Picture 1 (tube, rainbow over the protein chains, first blue to last red):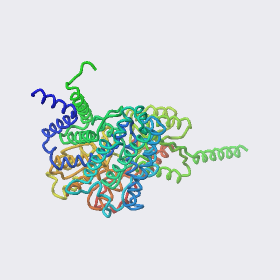
Picture 2 (picture 1 turned 180 degrees about the horizontal axis):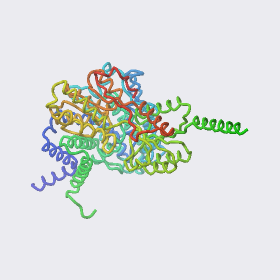
Picture 3 (picture 1 turned 30 degrees about the horizontal axis):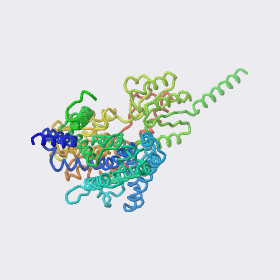
Picture 4 (picture 1 turned 60 degrees about the horizontal axis):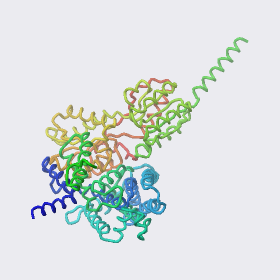
Length: 324
Length: 316
């Protein structure tokens, strides 16, 4: 009986290694500075993580389908700049759908190249990273984009508003995570994404339209990026052209930290959310602890490696494995 | 006869000298990364406009796109084209030194603009034209101190400091100017924390959010530029913390607007137009053999809510 419970606990731990890591860090930071766990701080971290988080949700689909998306950072800059520019030209009501349409066109183009033409996603999206950056700069002429009348618009609601005491970006992030989590775990489409990423050839032979599934994953990623751009634009009502620069690697780090395999076929939305939160809380925790910032780069890396190790150790049931 | 010969010769000589001085100067420029921000975009436009306005100047305008290797290649191209002078906005203060030396050895004077190269390269550059970032930091400290004195809190005020990207000369110099000057003018004001905002509004907003949680009492924020300053201001507004004095540098349009709205106290007025015109003028002065100081700073005055009417809203 006692061994049964021990086994069951081990099983549960094995599945939730990343959660354990998360709990350990939260505890450590709280001991270092009790203000870490205050409602205000937790809200502010989750609110700023929401932008990265929403992007990571979409990239989770792409990664599970066995591909990469390195273009999301540039694409987010594009969405942000476009929606801010159109806000003053068309008004917020028209600017938002127009921006979504433009971002989805870019995503569809990537999806077409990777899905239907079967080009390597690393090459395609790495190229799109700079191509879209160039597009953004051409569009804006290199100028910062700012909404002229910052007080007379309701556009700020997506980034600055709150409902029922909870900041809107968190609501969007949570809502989208719940919805996409269901799509991935409970719908036929979700099963297809896993199948295509796990073994594309087998999936094709069992009648799954591989190209279309990959295409759809990129569209989902595009929609998430557009949503992130909307939150970003709304949060500061103005932006530099480089706002999303470098985010693609953070997004990928969060997705992989959550346990999605870069080879495709595994990962969940829930774990990606944990990955995003770990990254967000590390950054904030190190600030609150007051470490000198040159040290922070190193410490961030150490913590990420620790998290990945804890996750793997829990799966193996032991801390190290002499035979690979 | 003799006299006529001499006259003819001397007139010819004079004429030659005349054409020589009116001959166009060919000036090449390799910029850091045009288009990456509004400052550099405006700089390029102003540079081209200033060059066009001067009939004696012909320019070759290049941009390195932030890439050191490309900038070095552009320097070599300009040497090959045998321009009369080269203006460089270094992508990296260390890595471009060999290229600057090469131009120097080819007899082409090099003028460094906006951000200086590392000291090891000073011997090869004719002049540096740009803002004095240490003075900018010091002036920001004075702006903040004066305001604290007006408010009567200069004996106890607590300040947080958001710097530019770690490792960037501009960021380091502004931080140094601020941190050295503040204790001189306001010895009882403490800087309680310093973190980088990476010249990024969103990053700065996150840093400020953490500061607001960590410190219950913040009286002032110094940010390495207005973009970051406005990010910090957004964080304070969202948290409902009023009465914080925000001081930035490189006054941006957003900072100017926030000053007009009464939310943001002051900044340093640094015009990319002045920057570009100063660089071109320095190059012309060097070519005309005028005495030019090695560190040829253009003025970047203080701007606060009190005197902002004297300055036009920045275009970037």
